[in-house]
Length: 193
Image (cartoon, rainbow, N blue to C red; front, top):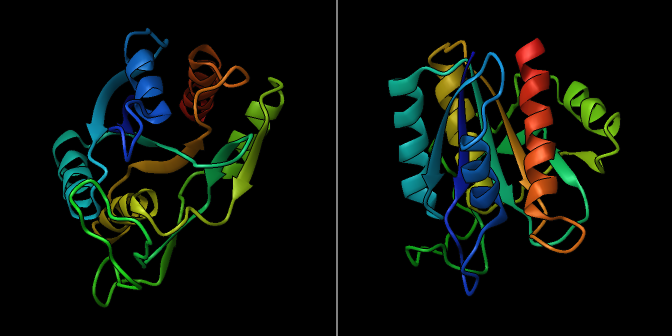
């Protein structure tokens, strides 16, 4: 199974991003039956959308697992929906600060993940990993990237399964080892489907 795994570059005043640290570490591991490509995405509304579409076209993965860092929260959040809106009080790393703009003009209002997010959540809970299904990926770059990915998949009838997972910031409770274990469990569950 070919898996494309993405994480984001650091953002704002932070010099690390738990999503990229986790993706990078997973790229160093061998997961049975999985051929994994790991790519860092820019924290850019425009740049990340263009890149994720290009990656899907060029790599044609069986599964796309996108990781992002959530500002607050104590769970691994599995995102169910991406909505067609960009809105932020803070600019992205390019300085772009959209206010209630569509991601894709005249695009679908929203897309749902084409994976069973409940199955992924159950797999984490069965391993005592705190997780929940989220019905809002926010309106910042994470949601925008997810929307671009699902739009590319659905509009072009690609066979790729895709999901976005929000991770907490690195902390004593959420170490890099814990986050790597959590996403490895998700990838192993996807491989079974």
